[in-house]
Length: 230
Image 1 (spheres, rainbow, N blue to C red):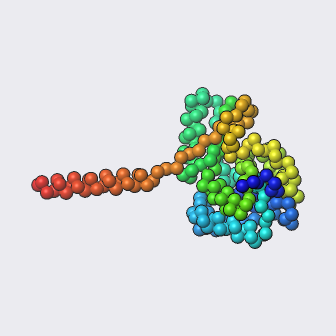
Image 2 (image 1 turned 180 degrees about the vertical axis):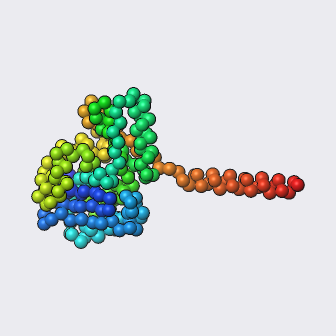
Image 3 (image 1 turned 135 degrees about the horizontal axis):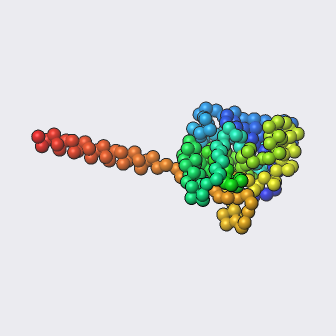
């Protein structure tokens, strides 16, 4: 799907929904997540979220666009890790990612003085939002944590129509901070910004439940044999 010719749009993602703006809208518009779609930043039902996105697009008659998603501090998990050896730093990054309460987590590290800043986000929420928009011919250009906006934070903090339009005109320089890895970034040259992208694997609960069931059955058989032998 060719997204190159689409106009730019801004989506500010917060805990309970998002704000949206693109050129031509008279004001910033918003969507509040319904409980059976998203609750506490966790996707309850992906199909419901996708349907809600479509209804939002239809309601405001939005034209397809390339969306820059800004992650509110309320939805992104952050930790600065500094003053450690490379091995200790890697272990601390892993420990932090493990504390983020989602099965699948999209994370990236950014250099800071004597260490790194780690930021993580619920990958399932991003994926379902992406699916919802892409099914309606929209595209996702980049996903930027609010913490990395620098002076542009003032535009997002007071998200008026004028500030949203101004942000869209000047946001290209933020692509270096996106959480989304590209083919070019997989084998980067020396860079003052990009460190790494890590994804926390989903837990295999099905296998765990099967193993528990097998052990329960074996203990039951053993108990039966012990009783019959008496």
